Length: 201
Image 1 (tube, rainbow, N blue to C red):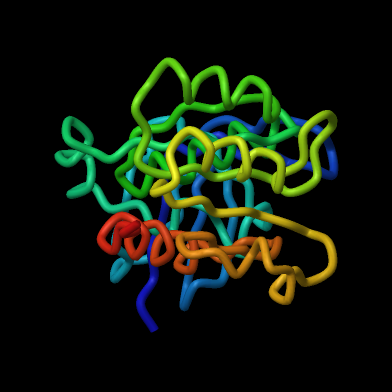
Image 2 (tube, rainbow, N blue to C red):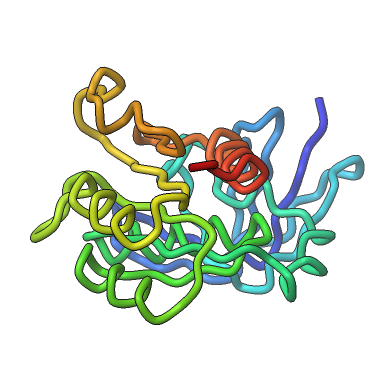
């Protein structure tokens, strides 16, 4: 089974509340096999230097965020589609921005719905990602406000609560609901689908 070793990571340890610098993480078959403060020796492993990037196993998909990082994506950054993300949690917000950035997209982050809408009014975005439950505005309210401004923009709503697939708001064209923990591939596929299949009105 193929192995990937991510080197020079800053590991966010949630249990201890610490940032652990210069760690190596080995992923085999999309599962974390080893975390070390020294170089992991495996001759057949593909190695990716993340240059101090912060990673947090388990935050999005029970694996490690950067498993989707491909150095070839870095060349796309100058022309990358952009998105704005509304998240109540600073850690979740920053990690989501880091994750989506590793997939090759430019990103802005907001601490809540009102800040996201202010950014939306000042900039051009291709897609909106929002948490469902936030202080102040909910994700549904962000969706409604964004659609008043631009009825064609895709919106991805991320939720850790009960399924919302039967909610008519979730059935709107261009809206996708993803459950936490968010699978990296599902998020990447969703963004690509939304950006290539723009809404028609």
